[in-house]
Length: 74
Image (cartoon, rainbow, N blue to C red):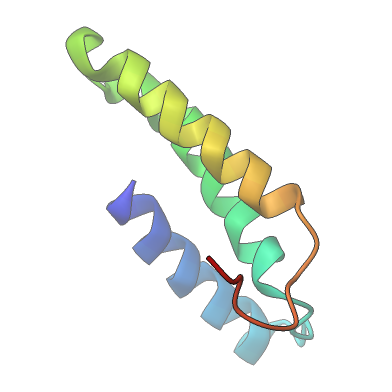
């Protein structure tokens, strides 16, 4: 997942600099990372696939949630 995040940041940087795409919010990056992780899931060993699917579900949920104005209180 970390490699997908790093690659997603690099691609987002290139989009911002060279294609003139404006920054909207972090959810754009999270959605791109989720798509990459889903595409790369075939490379994951079978014994770790369930854990990867759980992380992918959490990532998709986080990407689809609205942005926060403040940190959540506990």
